[in-house]
Image (cartoon, rainbow, N blue to C red; front, side, top):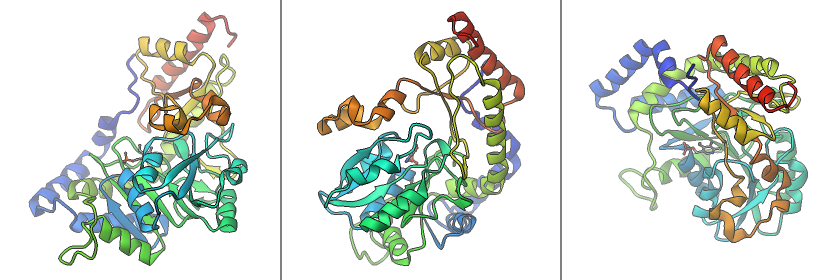
Length: 371
Ligand SMILES: Cc1ncc(COP(=O)(O)O)c(C=O)c1O
């Protein structure tokens, strides 16, 4: 059996009529860049989160960069963030003129460990970027308390956590601003690159919206960048948004089933959700000491898996200049050789999941580890 890591075509088939009509409408109106579909999506996404403003961008990476510029980051300003994320979280700190300061992760949730944040704060620290990694909210009460105490801004990187909740409250509503990615494989995904900033700060929304569109249309009040959402992406997102809650339930169902199927299999540690957090399972990431062997076995058996991510950020060549050692971030360092993301999407069938689990059991039996 062949099990893809994600199956966007299966999702398309479920909403084909709506998507095709929405795309045809964009073409009929030549509403290719910004326009009515984009405005409708900005309003709908802000409303879905209960936020005042949504500023759409070309992608989630730009959303981070533009937000930091909007918060007036200055050369040498330090920003604390997790050692375990996609590089967009940190490359944008540097691009905006700041200095990346890594912090290790919680041993259970893969998220920024708030117990370690204060030890990373210096007189140059200006902000914290928690990432709700894999779809599980970071410990926002703790992050916000530290930010308040030290007068730091907070940008929530919500690229993987659409509609996830912390103590019943949606992620993206805690910090000064939050950024989302709508990359095709995300829980809410466009048919190309797309992203946005959400905030309740009118000045920040105004500045970032202006900066992202060449510093203003007609009257350039500043030099900006070109980071516009296009109409086709917005039209696709408008069709998909009403389905998101149902798809999220589907992901939770699949995750709960994996939890059961993989319980007690070899040394597999299934993802744990901390109390009071509603995980949206953008990714379902197991841990095992036999990760490389298991990945190969699953690949040979037709099951696609991914490493999110092959290394913790401080250990990529891009950050060699910081000179970090394994002991600096022991949790993130250990996880980089243990993590394995299994296929998860609402359309995966029980038969497909059974097959994935059976292959994992077979691998551990063959390796002499009791399952
Ligand atoms: C945690 C995180 N932050 C930021 C981004 C950047 O989003 P985009 O790919 O839309 O630029 C991603 C996308 O993969 C992500 O996973």
